[in-house]
Image 1 (tube, rainbow, N blue to C red):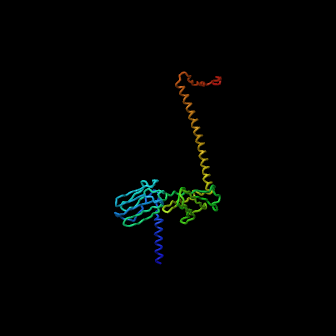
Image 2 (cartoon, rainbow, N blue to C red):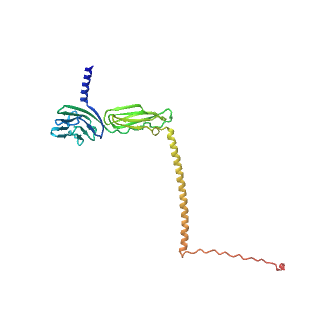
Image 3 (cartoon, helix red, strand yellow):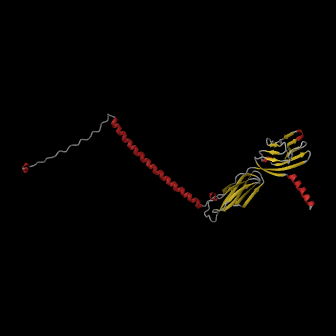
Length: 297
């Protein structure tokens, strides 16, 4: 039993040295890779290497007080590395996906040791977009289903999932970089359950909740707003016609009054025009007939 335990420990140590300690970080953040040394001794030398080619990126020679940072030929680490002169830890600032890979630190001097890190860098996740895949409305809300599609673009090393409440309905995962994903779902038009589409990786997630009333419509739901639009349009048209008629009447009446006023002012101000003479009316005198004076006596 002791031999099996020793063999297992050796295998685990070997695997840890090959694959390294896994470190996950979001793009744009900083990460510090430690040496597990609290204080570098005078005779210690520390070297940091990156990638399969073991390119030197940092070196400390304590005895000579030599602290150096190197840039790989493509310059990906320029102005991004910070070296702790006391512990030998390496910090990568404003990290991007091109800085993902294997980092190895070797310490020589009073004690020989090495450590390997496997750094994974994840881009910020986009918010999933839910759209309706149904081109027409449904005439029967009790039996028909609404087709939905949850989509994301330019993602890698992620999982896209549909949830009903807290229960997983379906999911799809990819390990490629910069790929587009889509995941379909069918729900009944009158479904009252809570649905959500979730995009996640090892350290982050983005969630979009489904609003069935906005994406899934029955024909009756679409007919009622159409009726409202027709009625409102008819009422607005009638009001415009009435307003036009009233405005025409107002303008015509104002024009007539203006013409009468102008004519009256012309007669008052122009002396050459004949003044209208008032018509003379003949007074009516009493008419006396032939009265027989003998009858008066």
